[in-house]
Length: 242
Image 1 (tube, rainbow, N blue to C red):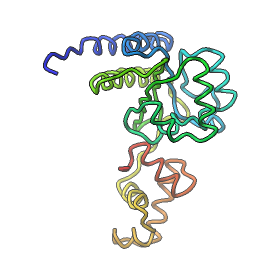
Image 2 (image 1 turned 90 degrees about the horizontal axis):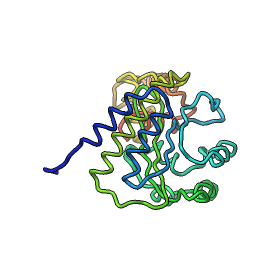
Image 3 (image 1 turned 30 degrees about the vertical axis):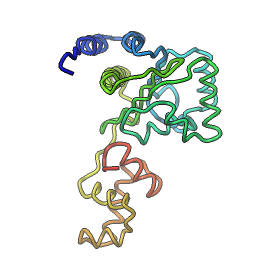
Image 4 (image 1 turned 180 degrees about the horizontal axis):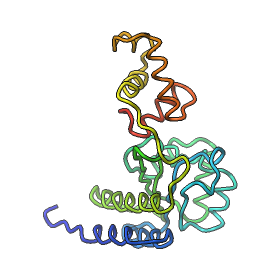
């Protein structure tokens, strides 16, 4: 690392931040990613298209138009193992890692992408407290042998592109998330550890009914429909430790 030169990374960050259109930003990211072995980019928010209109979702890629249309029409994101892993993961991972956990329908979604020669890649999850989860997926016809430094370089440039585009194209109607209060986060953290309301109340020295109401407030803030959903949402948005 003594001879490391981050000039290319810095130049890419500056170039992306200077763009004023989504097309230019994606092109800058593509130029930076290509020497690493990636020619295809998917960048988007991980939102259920059944509950949010597609026009209100950040979704950009340089994939073939036919493939993009097929994925949208089949609501592939609901079954895509890469997208599902990105919701839970805080670190970059290879597509192969996600494929290992794919369902039968998930494997069909993967095969659809493979049909267009996009057979390997990496996903860089995006998680910020003030926005919903998203990711930047870089693909190609093979998985390059990348060093930890190269993965870190790709991650920081992908982050720059993602949040620049989210800022440029937003605000989105669902983008801002209310932060949990310290007490709410505390109760959700214990719920994540499998503690009952009675146990949480005993640990914190408060009434069981207070725990119940605190978890209900946290659920409303994160639009969670049940206890498991509340825990997973809090983890995905960095509100509690996984």
